[in-house]
Amino acid sequence: MLLTRHARERLVKRLAKKRKFELVYAKLWEFLDRSRRIEVNEKGVILTDGRKSLVCARLECEVLSLEEIRERVSGISEAYDCVFFDGRTARHTVPRKFVEDLSDGRYCFYMNREKKGLYIGSEESLLVITIRPAKGEERNQASTGTM
Image (cartoon, rainbow, N blue to C red; front, side):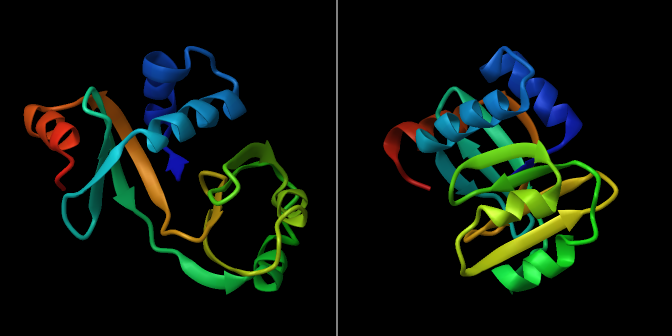
């Protein structure tokens, strides 16, 4: 799960209260643990806990082995926002160093060189667009458990 600049600012304001990169993601993981998923359409997803909602867009990712991922990030020397969803790890670091700590396997891989974002995980990648107060129907679905 990657964040737009706007989403990161909203998460700082509404959840994390501090700007430290790892802390913002720690609060995001906590939110995901208590939230429900609403499939909007083939491009959008809403994750809600009944009070707040994350509005997300799906990102096109490739399923690659860890060795293929290492090859893709080997030439990058700039720091990226790196997220490993399965291990709930997020760091602003050089991708080749980040990938060293991962266990072998096949992962969904998404990288945006312009925005300097990297996602690795077993689930599809989402781009968080914003966080907002939950709408009435989202509150109802979160409380009844139906999606």
